Structures are given as structure tokens and as C-alpha cells.
Length: 160
Image 1 (tube, one colour):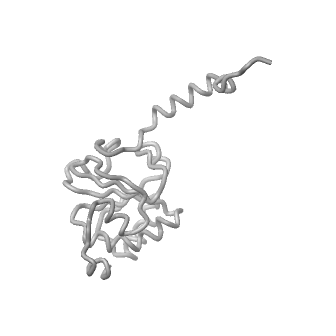
Image 2: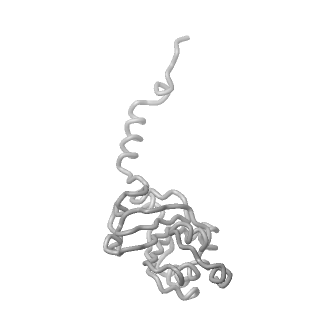
Image 3: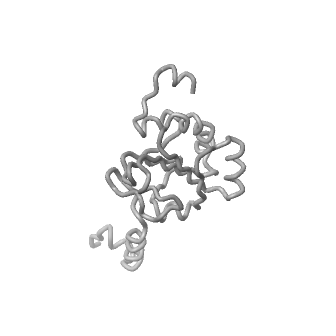
């Protein structure tokens, strides 16, 4: 019996197609990268400080995060942008329910994966002048504060 390498176990044509698909898909932005892989409806390069948060309406952690966003945006001095997998109608419904005062964009999971490479939700990017300063999975306003380096006084944290 001859030795077979791991790669020989797979069809070369299948491997080539898989590698081509990986190269076509955008990589997840990392610290120091320019965030804009694909243009958003909002020009984040022109914004001094922003947080871009991706959520999926099929994710329980994302749904829980919605109730935390007002507490964060009340203290965050930059621009907060929420990108949701929900339909325009679903986004409008939760915007009215929580009385959000920040922009909410709609993006399908497939587009999010292909253009931004964010495989997990809720996931947020902290940007300065369009460059990624920090990125992480976020579950609550404290995670968002940590992402941006926002430190609230104990009194403020207890009030939030």
C-alpha cells in the first residue's frame, strides 16, 4: 500500500475552486485596516469616530443587545451605526419600539459574510476616520464601552 498525502485525498479541481472562492471573499477587517471593503450607505471614512455593529435577528444574543444600545449611545460621542439582517419592516418595528436615534442599515447574512467577513454576531467595529481601531463580539453595553475604551464613572454605570 502506498502513502497518500492529505491533499491527494481531495480532487484537485475541487480544491482549486475552493481556493478561488476564498480569494474572492473579502477578509475580515483587522486593526489598522481601512474598514471600507465595500461602500456602506454612510461614508464612515468621513466620520471621526464610529461604531459599526452587525446583528442578526435570528441570534438571541443580538436580540438581547438591542435593549442595551440606548445606554451605550447615550454616552458614546461618535456615530453608532447598526447593520441588521432584518427586513426594512422588522428594522422599523424595533427602531420604533426602542426609540433608536441612530442609523440602521439592512444587510443579508450572505452579503455580510461576502463583503465584510464577519462570521459571528453581534459583532462590532470601532473606527476612527474609517480605520479599524478595535473589533470584537459584543453582548452588552459594557462590551461596547470596552471596545471603544469608554470608561464611565461608577455613578454613570449604575445609572445605565
